[in-house]
Image (tube, rainbow, N blue to C red; front, side, top):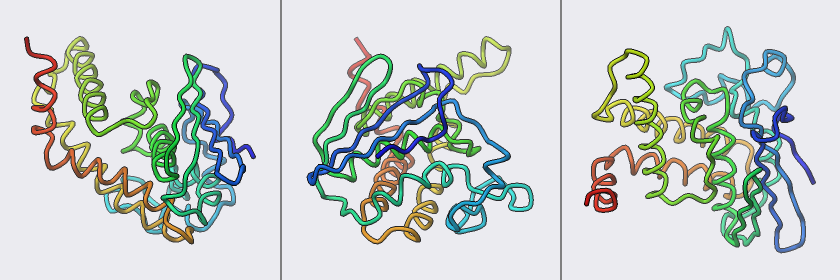
Length: 235
């Protein structure tokens, strides 16, 4: 079964996830990293839980009088129902194909789904999540917390370098990154309520909880997380 998250115009911007369950059922998802906010999609018919004002995130900058749908919810509309009856601990084989390489992992549904949902959400048109789009272009499936801290910090500092080259003052103390993770923690916690409304079992919900746990951990201990990485970069 194939579910496309907007058709890709450029091959290098496409990431493909293939889930094979123990009963042999297979589900394929294509994610176009460079998709944007489509006004026609925003006003089209979608599931009730994708409405912007349905359990809207408390820190969402979008307004219901101008936007009808939550961008990441619409993006996940064809994914969430497929996993709504699955338990998070069920075994699955996940293959992730990018133009450069292929990854594969035998894991539980929660782990594979968290990786897919994280990519779809990070490449969505959500004003908060879209700040992660640079990382989405260099997607690392099944990333650990340590890898996530390294990648997000490195990406943030690269962005500050570009700010400096553009004549702006760079944020060398990572205060902006710390604030971003606080916003992500709130967003993931609120977004879980949308998922709960359309799921019979816990696979979808626990995948979102995994994303929330990462953002929460980094929010409360970014400095500690970076200190653990320090020995790898200090002679």
